[in-house]
Length: 305
Picture (cartoon, rainbow, N blue to C red):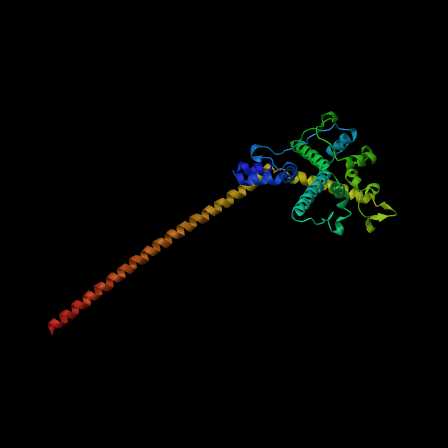
């Protein structure tokens, strides 16, 4: 069970809607960038995939690119989607700047520590035209929908998306993607012959990128650990749900006991206040009677004299 489903079972409708909104934040942002609308989660619509006008016939490169995108492990697919998400944010920022002033926008991040890791693929994405980038987002949305519902991979003849960006397709074709692993699919954007950024001094050794076996093994272990962590933190186990429900019941019982004790204390205070008021009234009555007695005694004394 997902957190939103648990919230619905406990009748926390607003919390469930917010959790669903957070769960599909990335795909909703990509859809909003393409067509200006979001899926209506209240109607069980989680993905809204638009279609581009003027569809073209797919070529071998496009089919190969989509096949490699579908075969990516979840960890690398998430990293790729993160870069696309950042590129969407960059393009929206550029559009906002252009709407205010005709200034010169920076091409990429100004942090030198991000160059060797982030910029290769992001510079490729930044050079995509509008149609190519839109097509890439549509393919990502389709793949995210397939992975969410656990659908099997389609055959090449069943592909329905449009032109994957030409530059990426050409690069994958020249790099012979069929002989590369899934991890090399992401790093292929930063190969030496196809780099669009300045070299970093510490990143080269004898004119070649340093790729040690220990680094690859550590990255593979990190990817496996990340995949296991995503699987562990994804659905909510029934035992955790029951334990949380029991703790909630205990807390509610304690709160009820405190409220009852508070009510009892208030009743005692009210009773004490009524007793004080009654004693004050009796005291006033005694004073009145005492004054009357004193007056009577005075009158009797005068008559005696």
